[in-house]
Image (cartoon, rainbow over all chains, first blue to last red; front, side, top):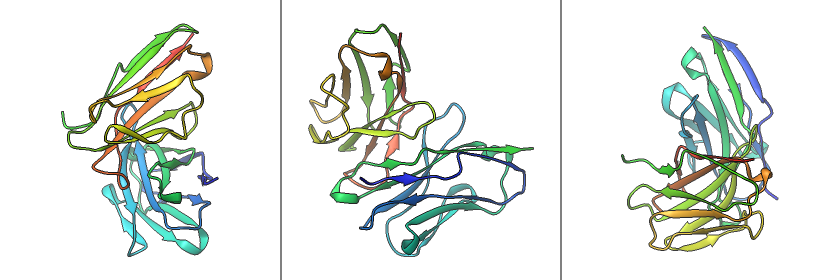
Length: 114
Length: 113
């Protein structure tokens, strides 16, 4: 079965620190990749997505992610985090087996200290 | 509002009762998805509608769970004989067509006592 792994469950950073959150998936075929964010008390929002083309994807709020096919990875990065980035981050995959459902990772809770 | 809406936002019920959760997708979106999110976990897929038909219901955990979308817009997730293990946040999402970005609603937090 397809799966998505997010290795960091809780991350605590100080403001201005750099962020990298890992995401690995287990399917070898064509997939679409997503990062969603859930701010406290809010619903899931799309940060960025990869369908094809340039493997370095830029999203909202200064986030970017790099798709490395050989490593089945889609890590999320931000060079300098802000207190307002405190949230839970989910990596998701869809497309395996011709279905459209998302398979989500377990999420990473990020806390940014002011 | 232009987003996905879900009602109720919170539902508390007793073990064995029947519940209905409603999702109103973004207007014009033909694809609708239901997910369930338990504490400390990522959302888990339940069912996907394309128009009025369930295109993929492989995530429904058992026959106590059922969902409909009779007119291709609003969807209702129905849970019979609720169990304490059904307690979770039930999320609905929609997209313009199958595949691509999904837009999520705020969820319904279901608590089964």
